[in-house]
Amino acid sequence: MNILVSAHSGLRYIVLLLLVVAIVNAVSNLKSGQYLKKDKMINLFAMIFLHIQLLLGLILYFTSPKVQFVEGMMANASLRFFDVEHPLLMILGILLITLGRKKAEKQEDPSIKHKLILRYYLLGLIIIFIGIPWPFTHPTLGTGWF
Image (cartoon, rainbow, N blue to C red):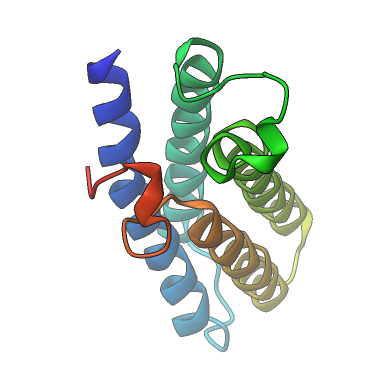
């Protein structure tokens, strides 16, 4: 169990870095008039790592003692966060990023591809960032940096 928690916690930094790289890449290429294979690969790798993170999270959701469906769970901030808030925000962010990439790949105009990636990946990143149990935002949850 600890290995899964550590993998899920540590992988978040890779996922966040890949999302930031994809967003910066989209911004820097908005006016280039090109959508190269490297752009496609950056966006794809960000999405793949997000989906790996989702799979680890789903395994933890069904096996972790932090997820408990008990009476009064909505009144308990820790239980509510891990039972409802965290998974809902993460799934929403991953869904937005996945849909954004799918929409971008269907476009012919490279600048529209980059705009779609920028919009969807940035919105997804913001939602995901809000849903992460950072020690400075949720000190009572008992989560650390890793």
